Image (tube, chains in turn yellow, red):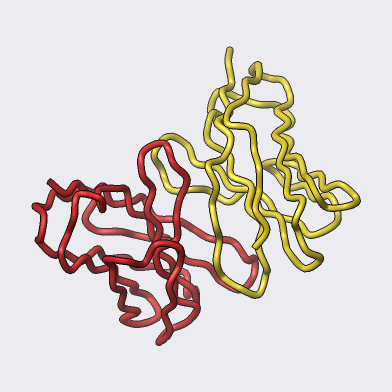
Length: 110
Length: 112
């Protein structure tokens, strides 16, 4: 599985969009990009995933660059409850193994 | 529908003691996983089970054993606990579609 690189922390003002970057320069053609988050000490929560195209759901949008070497998770209107550690994971879809890195701690401030 | 449940929530052991962490899911998922999370770190995969009757090692399997008892249950055993195994342990399960993992609330284990 390709490795990912994320900034250790980011700040965002409440109500503004939070853009969380992830580099995965060694990604191969059949590897998916997944995003999870972990609020405080709870179990991680699935957010979104994609292969090549941009994806959107009720929680967030995922923008994947054309060369697929990086992606951005967008929370369109961050709230205080979005304060969490966000993990970007790249893996082969046929293998049910996720490798979490250290993630990005997002601090949403009033 | 309880999702993924784990027992116990908290446990304190002495070095050398053994114990089994229990995990169950009611979502009819084929795959189940055990992770550990040390303070300030991301999750690391210990073992996983792609389907009933199969198990495989993850990143950090040493010192642990697992049993996929049936489709619902996946247990993690520490035969001789060590202080280095002090951590929070998360169990997860996933189905084929969508291909996402659902996590339990975690077991906080301290080994003295």
